[in-house]
Length: 98
Ligand SMILES: [Zn+2]
Image (cartoon, rainbow, N blue to C red; front, side):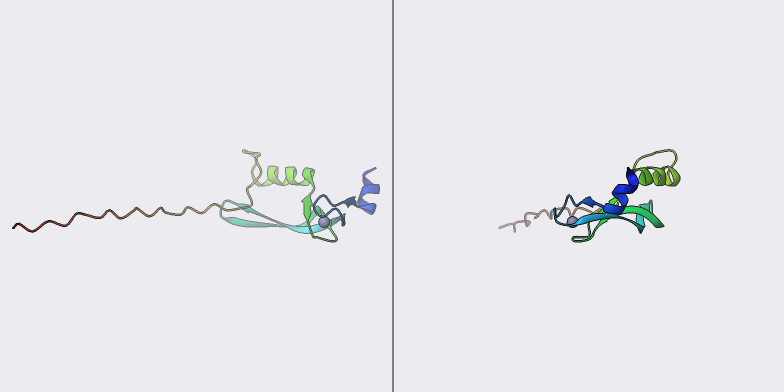
């Protein structure tokens, strides 16, 4: 039963010592340039190391809500474009005419 899991918790896969318990947390995700906060989001949180695992079904529904066309999970990490520096080429000095 799912209810039984939610009351007992599940062993943490990260630290092996803690118990991940079902909680409602505030979920943060980026939608293009906007930071989206979702209160009361269902997740499993370890009581020792604090590892979070979000409810897969809830993530799926959230992504449908945020982006109905793509259906792909929004990457949590924003990509920054770092402009590459062009290596300065040393120009040979014009030799003096002797
Ligand atoms: Zn843990």
